[in-house]
Image (cartoon, rainbow, N blue to C red; front, side, top):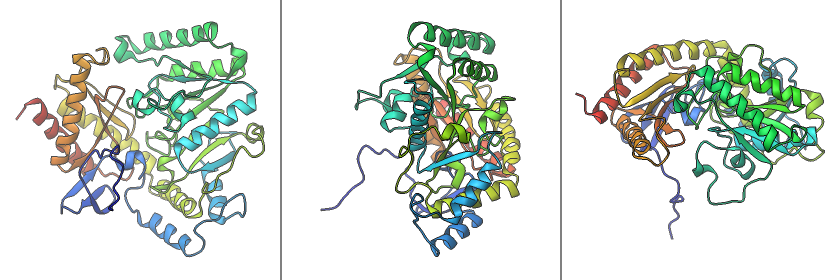
Length: 428
């Protein structure tokens, strides 16, 4: 009998990879694809960066797996020192896991143990993972949490300041969302039981939206006032993706209590982490942090090499420059397409949204936005460009180049995406 992959796994493209390098995937079909998916924001230094490959190869010849609560290994010590150079002031203690979801769950445990409180508040449209606790925090779409309830108790959602969907100015939306947060604490969660607020500084699967700075500052003020923790999920927005090393650094003076990172930190090797002040981390109960594969030696070596490459090649600055180029190019070439309601981006984390953002979910307007986005994503494949969709209703084409993307590759991507959109909407 022949085994098959689960039928629930649906590929966004039919591409089978032969090999890949930098921003390019070379398929077994002989075609060369410009990869603006990067493994959903994972291959930060591009595919198979030679320094990352060399570090992993060298480590494989020394030790592959050294369980780090049994024996310590040098790559993890080097990674902790290197990561510490980029962590916010006062955040100096790190726990390693394998995936973003695991790191989110570790942050949930820490928040509840450190505060002795039970409730967590998450922001609508946020994505935090697919495991039970992480899915319980996720409101980027029902597909991430439906079908295996009941979910984890002690979680409440507060509105996102979604100016586009609400038909408000950004300031109006922020005022509305902060007022609703305060109302939540007056009607559902006693502030004395609030353990933490969990939010992505730039929304990932929920829509590739930069959270307004004043809203983040408002949440920081409220967490401090109520003795709760501000937990920033930087799994997708971190490690240079937004043109700053951390996505929250676009908000001046903002410092989280707990920071979560994964994805781009090791250029494709599975490793994640939470970071917090040592005094706070020490409040986790003994035995609550661990795991067989966490902080794997090969993944840690790849992460050290990744951070070295990002620093040496100036990839955070490149993300900012190429992101501006990409956003400007898309707005010039697609700004007059009536089916598009918004083109936005922060660094190399960009979105092209279709349809009517105010249309109720399931309505013809919302369904049309999803249809257009899906058709464009598929049309991109014919243009040898790989993209993905996202958003609660699937109405967004997201564009996620590697941090090493060049100016010429950005121009090529704009041209290919523009042709795909024009073909779908019936332009020549």
